[in-house]
Amino acid sequence: MPTRRGSLRQRLWNPHAVVFVSSFCIMVIELVASRLTAPVLGVSLYTWTSVIGVIMAGIALGNYTGGRLADRWASMWLLGLLFALAALFSLSTLGLRELLRDIAWPEWLPLMGRVLAYITTVFFLPGAVLGCISPVIVRLSMTDISRSGTTVGRIYAWSTVGSIAGTFATGFFLISWFGTKDIIVGTVGILGFMALWFVTDAPWRTAVARAAVLIAALASTYLALDQAEVFAPACLRETNYFCINVNEEPLDEDRLAMLDLDVEGDPPIVRTLILDRLVHSYTLPDYPGALIYGYEQTYAEVIRPLAQETPNLSAFFIGGGGYTFPRYMEETYPNSEIIVAEIDPGVTQIARDMLSLEGSERIQAHNQDARTFMKAIEGENRFDLIFGDAFNDFSVPYHLTTLEFSQLVDRLLAPDGLYVANIVDGGQRGSFMRAFVRTQQAVFAHVEVIPTIASWREAPRTTWVIVASQSPPDLSSVQRPGTPLPDQELEAYLAMEEPLVLTDDYVPVDNLLAPVFADSERG
Picture 1 (cartoon, rainbow, N blue to C red):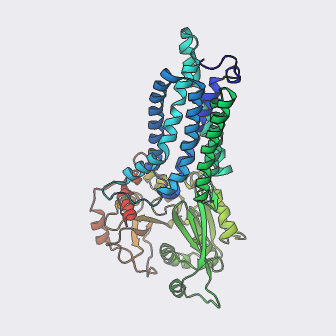
Picture 2: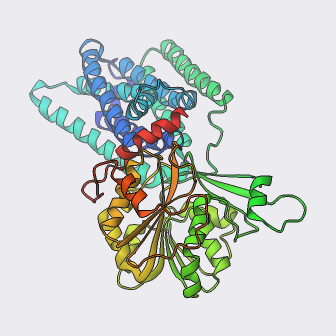
Picture 3: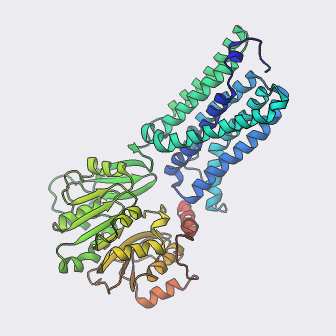
């Protein structure tokens, strides 16, 4: 190994430990990348595909470049330099994320191109530099050519073990324990320590000079980012699923007049739940019977006739969010049974702490994926109402949109029960909305479509309420600006594209929504 004879680095040299650390850090950055980009780009198949592809491309280029470097300059100094660059580029991801947050992409660039360009700019260099390390380690470890296969095999086996450990540690523990920014800083600390260890394999004056330069570079980068408030908490609470924020402001006069609340003194406070970059719900903590979101007002009107006939309603909610409509039902229909499946326990806890869910007696909250929970209770419950409230903006859990899932919903509904779901899509475009409605029509005898705004045809994006049932639903109470589409108009709207039924095997939700998302970003 080309280092000074008998040095501490030589005596303690363990290539397996070094490659384990570098591979561990690569996977930490890859998993954290998806959470760092969620508040900017949302979470979709495009973001995950881009993150994985960009990191793999970086590693591939790094492996090639690292091999060339190792053949010419393999040394402890080179290894330390690579770890130092990896630390600097990893730290820079936090600054680049903020710098590019509001960038105006060219209109001709499609959505997948924007996502790929953003993630490449932020995360390619850390992957590429970390990819350079393994070939250098192989070269430094190659002391016996007759055992080169064994040497390379062991190093890459430990590299894989490091990747596995980084994946499980980050996904299962680190994000929920520390949050993404602290994880990046911690990873930079590990890489910086490795860099110091190797660059200081030199006479003491040279070692001190190198250490001083490295520490100054990392410290100045950190301080510059801190000055730009990059390390300020971006989330009220960060979980394995969401960056959660709650904004608070007085209810504006127009909404106050629309809700017709009996308010004395200052306007009531409205709290807005934001998951990643998406507004999920508006809550008036002191007025649980008040609904601000248009689709929730439509929900209330849709269920009113059924509630009058069935005083003891049983309702199941696919997604809880701010628990606004479950609290409305608890207030308006006090004898109702209300079960909520909300996948993120952090969201439920925020609802308890800040959105007045604490103390609710009739709302049963289960922190579990809705489909898994529904499968577990199949045969035990027959609900009067099932609400699909897990779709928000362009964040769509695709497994809750398919034919097989709708069949599960049907099995859990009473014979005259209603499945009521809200989705967001473009007005005339509406490819996802059409596919979703076609899927419901394959299961339910009656499917009604209610746009929540009268100008839905011209709007670049529209929130729709879909009502599905095996019995004709009574929608006479729906008086919102967007009333149910007449059958002929609905069929003409659906006929604008080839019929598509979403299934577990084929559910291209992200592709269907991409044009609308791109139009929204331009707007």
